[in-house]
Image 1 (tube, one colour):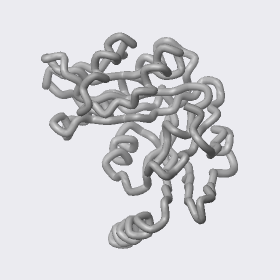
Image 2: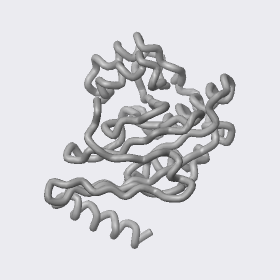
Image 3: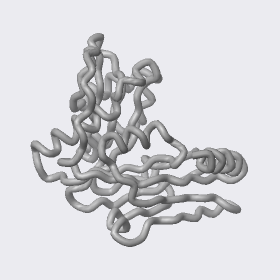
Image 4: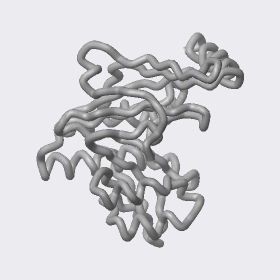
Amino acid sequence: MRLTRFAEIAFGRFARLVPCDVSRIYRVAVDSVRQAPAFDDGIRCRFLEAAELRGFMAEPANELNPDTMRQVVAGQVRCFAAIDERWSLAGYACFGNSTIDPGNNRGSGKLHGIGLRLPEGVRFLFQAFVLPEFRGRALMSRLIAQAAAEYTSVGGVYEIVTTTSWTNRAFQLSAERCGFELIGHTAEIVLGGRHFYRYPTGESARYGFFGGPSRQ
């Protein structure tokens, strides 16, 4: 643990000088997602219709990417949200299919990001966020469980993959609580204005990782 913390500090200092990102890749079968803990807090997790999402995007604190609206309308993304009794947005998780643009999966603004070309039946969890005042209630685990339950019920989706910065312990813990397993890493670094990438090999390569400027 001490070595990991030392590596995180060293990486943080290096990233201030050289734009870079190292991400962990996780996956889980939708029928293996663990049941989220029960909370009697009046918050309900559900699929968010496009019109509802549009309303929540008007509030800057929600940190919703404007391009998400276009992707939801186009059927490329499904958004699940946690909503409290006052109809306030407590958190959300977006699930994309087919080709995931690099702009949806990047670190700093100087990075292009890493995209995916997903096989049929696989969904990519991204733009996952819980507002500060609602943290500590396992909302991310509850959102993932809700999405997995719907995918299992409807059929056609058998696996969820996600990536997160290797220093983002909070999301890693949420993913591991849900049953995600670590399967590899991706990396991007910018040197002399050129972008260099590291993609996983072997079985994980089937997710079609690629890098380059966003097409959004």
